[in-house]
Amino acid sequence: MSTEGIHAVFLETHNWGKAAKFFQSLGYELEFATDHNSGQLRNGTGPAVFIAEVPETQETRTRLVLKVADEAEFQPGPGVEVVEPFAGTHYGTREAVVRDPDGRLWTLQA
Image (tube, rainbow, N blue to C red):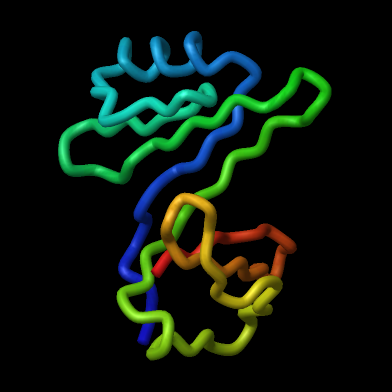
């Protein structure tokens, strides 16, 4: 079984409010916000953009999250290094991390 395409974009920011307003100015609508400076926005039926605020001392990261329908059926092909196998997250999903041949990390969400 393969992935089903881009599920979400995960962005870290130093200012949740400014980042959310930026995406809203581009036509994204806020789906939800948390009580710890993060939230999810979406434009139409496209992938979600989840934004989380991190301390100023931490470098911000951007990750693409690829959808996997069934983690038990998922079998990575040649050239896919599994860095972290599927495990539960604090926000209720199951995620794995893989590395591509150029060293980029990709999140898979089941």
